[in-house]
Image 1 (cartoon, rainbow, N blue to C red):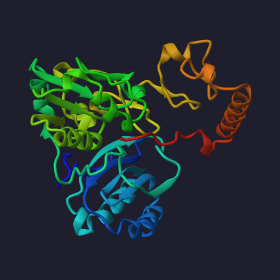
Image 2: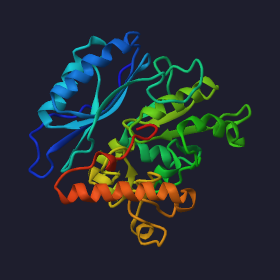
Image 3: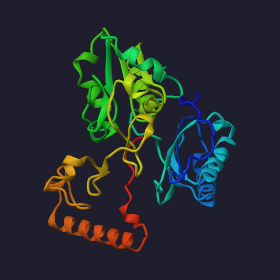
Image 4: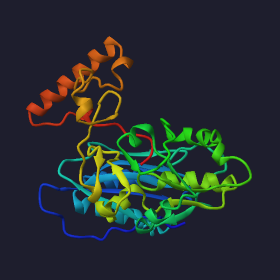
Length: 328
């Protein structure tokens, strides 16, 4: 099955300071030898000064990488040299600071975990809807719009009228769907689903198709492609889109947003949360202040002290970087 995002057009690097090219990618494809692909792929990334995370599984590849433009394009070319990944497509963004400090290539059971036996997006998924057609679909009152992302993502932005399942991880989505009266019974509603880059909707729409839903739609290329292509004046998107790197969030045109990350619980923080007396930089925020023991807070405070010392020396403390979240 071909990937569903629109291929980025290579272009000259923008003017400084946006020096780092970020490429988000995924493809569902049968890779029975995925374990053997790990070491050569890691070596290629390291040789080209590319960092980030790539996940390999029998069902395909998923991840985000960043680095010098030439390096990122070399890694993408290496991936597409495999005939099974020749149609791999990706989404690009630029950053002024390195989005990642390490390169990891991990072997997984699933490239995005849902834990539903027999589910195969390579065989059946919902109907793709291009960004320019998305709002017309949402204007239909007979369409049930579901945000498939986690609670911390939905908290800072979503489409107008979307249902928030309030899940903490993507693996909770099947149980939430089971508990919805509107999704039960013989008469199945029309359902539209969306996520950050499109990969989670491949599985969530495949799940609904498996359960007998005929009319299931998902946003082609995800929120990121929508924000890249749809002007604010014509958009039904409200707020910012959480992303899984040091930018934390982006808005229309994929411009970096105003959010920072709590280094304790990884919740995106706006100005009001950072003004709270419960916010201590690097230690706690209103979302996790009561969930940390004094010993944990002391350890986090020491980590933050080391981060600030490294910054004063003009270095970057690796512990300051955000760990990966579920999904992308």
